[in-house]
Picture 1 (cartoon, rainbow, N blue to C red):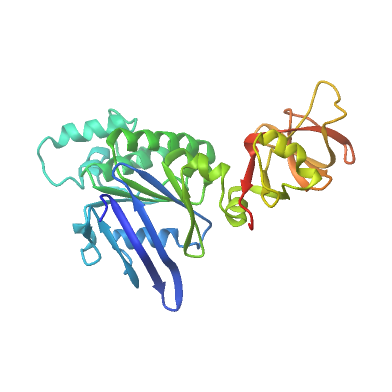
Picture 2 (tube, helix red, strand yellow):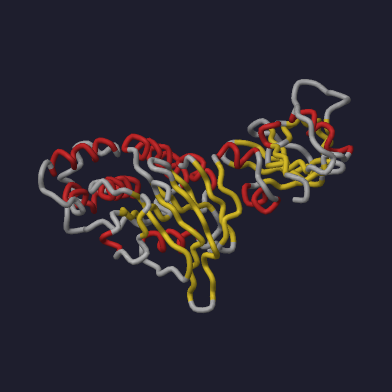
Length: 338
């Protein structure tokens, strides 16, 4: 069997409900894999089965070639980190980090090393009650890493934080996992978080894996319309159609007639600085602002209503016809039949 984590045909059931349905997944040593999907898709159930917190109704879990199905949770050598951190209020920061360490040798040095790694150097004596939400999660990460687990399992570790902080910590989490060479599985419903942290992303739905790929490959080449829609692609056009011509040109690659071009939000950008008789045209349906940018809902003939991007603060009256430029980075090609 392969080194690292190997999940083979895993099945998890709760009564008559199948939460995980025949999942097979390999996580190589030092690799970070994100389980990405909507609530109820089975990603946390799969993580808990790997940890030993949920029994398998079928399949197996192995690590470094040794089955762990019958190994108790505390003997698997896996670390766990959850959404709320679950810190001990009666221990200071250093006491929380040191809690899971098996030996006392060089404990203080190890705690200091980890706190420095997670950006909390000098925080050891502080009570956990004085920490912000982001600082608490950093302590929880340091505590999970303290025993040097052979596999770290993270279940929505950043979801309780506000978006700006979540985005910053996702980058820091990636840096820490890489710096320590930790093999890890991250559960998240947030696409941006998965793409920022993971080497590969496994998209789940209804208990099954739909696709496992590197973030860039997943974005550019979703294998099905189901995956593309979850990633945020909002319109789908047959490559052979007249409406797809400017999209195919922007992709600069040969497509088969039965391929389908998928458009994400921002596949069109409002053209400024002069007209272009050959530009794609979109009729304005409405304008909204999100995170400092203007998003214009436009009707494009042969494609439908899509979201185009415009300069910050741009305002357009409904019915206005705008020239649009295609952004190839917001396009994907689905294989024939999807």
